[in-house]
Length: 63
Picture 1 (cartoon, rainbow, N blue to C red):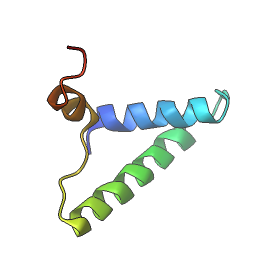
Picture 2: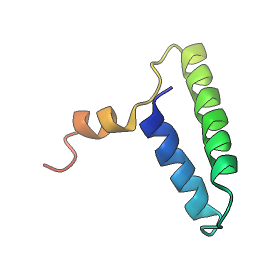
Picture 3: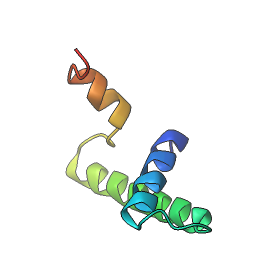
């Protein structure tokens, strides 16, 4: 799994929970689980796993 995706998701979780201190490992593990579940669902649906960096580049974001 892409470490950048995990880091980004863990950061989102941290922000949603009000930026608590001392829960880095918990947020990292939760991000891993969420992304793994999303990737599995995407495979079941026949789609490629979502890559946020590629999605924004492909959509012309920032132009």
